[in-house]
Length: 328
Image (cartoon, rainbow, N blue to C red; front, side, top):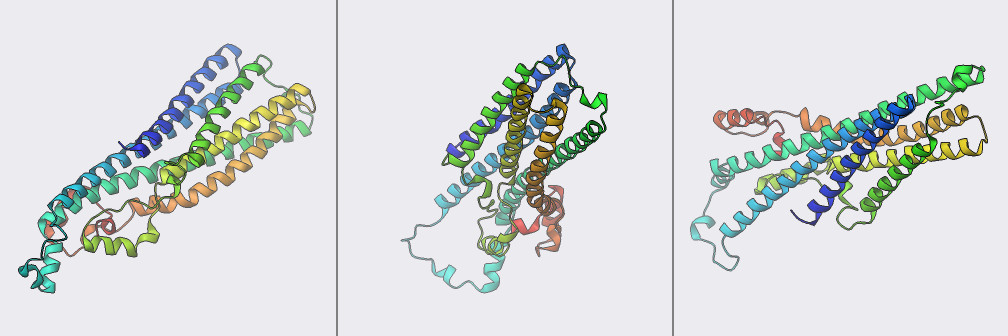
């Protein structure tokens, strides 16, 4: 595993483990403090840990695909003739039809089919994890925004229940938890934007699926349909939204401490502002994730794209390969 693999995997594992441990700590604190707020935040962080785990699996599959493809390219390079060796006379006399038959020979098609099957699997994991991240962020923003607006409405009417907070909640513990999470997410953002192996990964060109000449030409024509390592974009947007939540939590606790406004009003107003920011982040992610998910799961079958024999097409369908354009 190269430097990119070690750095990216360490980042993804760190985010998943840290989020899971923090959620467990919040659940323990909520149990003893009888705090509904802490319980809700802990459940939200458990969902975050689940989504980070999906992104981790997608990155692991991407790493395995890159390793397999590099190994195949190294094998093909060792088998290819030397550039200085003269070209055989028989190859100079090949007719155009014979060249096409060579491109679609069983050996090349089987190797390309196996590589394209791995690439399609990677694309599906990446797009599915990105879509799950976007849906989670959007659902979180909608839930928080609706609850906060209702709380502000009740507070404006003078409702006593809306003006009450969790009396047994330890604000110091919440502040320390938010500060720790903010440090973790700030470090992750610094790695994304400053580390030489990560700063461009969330918008790198996507996987090149095949090594044949026909495959390279088709990939070049369809390059605008690629979506890159979108699961890394999803992780980046997720980290940004979590950092915004941590900042909002710390600001709310500071305002509650100095008693500038009533705690219920401060909490609801800050939650509305944070949810609006998360709306923007989730929308930017879903704009990329939905087309990627559609391209990964809803393309034509291989028999509609490649003029191969029914035997090969049947074997491709048995492998679950649907993205024929990735094969060519």
